[in-house]
Length: 117
Image (cartoon, rainbow, N blue to C red):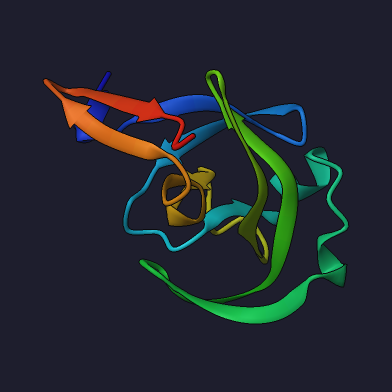
């Protein structure tokens, strides 16, 4: 259900590790900060260095591929993600790299996610 500020928040899992996510259709990729990446056991510094334009300005980071991301009963393999340097991103974002691979719609203030299969 839509929460505070009109946002959708879900509890997902990255590679089997639980992670609260803010659904963000304006985010190209799933996005996390370095602290979250370490907690998830990601070797993100082996990813591709990049610069991201965020609401707080330009931030350095790394582009990585996650083995699997799940939300509810949906599991999507090989999801592109960005790990942003530092802790400028205080909430992990579930962006379009996941959402484009599932069906999603809004119904009466509820976000519905379904498999494309």
